[in-house]
Amino acid sequence: MASEKDGKNFKDVYIIQQHFVNNKYVGKSEIRASVIKYDDKIELALLRLHKSIFTCNTSFLMSDQAPKVGTDICHVGSFLGEMGAGSFTTGVISFVDRYVESIDKTCDQVNVGAMPGCSGGGIFLNDGRCIGLVLAGKSTSLNWIMPSRCMVSWTNNKKIQWAVDDKIKMPTELELTKIPIEN
Image (tube, rainbow, N blue to C red; front, side):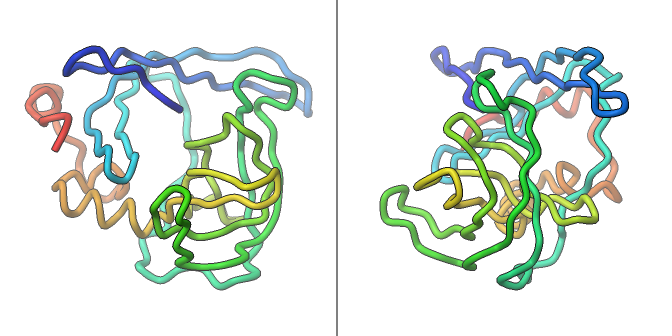
């Protein structure tokens, strides 16, 4: 998800959570979010949700070891509001630590279906742990992700580990306002 930048401030963005009962769409929640921390070198932003009813039942894979090639994964995507938005696709990890020249990054490669507009969408193990976020793709079934091990390292370097580790207490509202957004 991209956020527009206005001078030194980022404009708030909206995250939409769709609700289903027995595989039938029953509504959605729209949550306003603001950027807490941003790093343009690795294209990673930490967002603060401005609504407490948003539910999330996942955690990050905290290991510095990548899951093995062939590991089953899934992707929850939103294709820019197009047909297929809010979809769930499955696949496997197909390569670990691949340098991708076109985006000048080392990523993990996955063959899970993701369309244009899915950047930032989560890639998950079957147990619900997030192992990465979609960065770019070559086709609908060849995509590169920023691995969670890179996100964990980033949060450690920025001293914001609470963003990925639910065992660490989140800062107070006042402490959040004092975090410099950019490097």
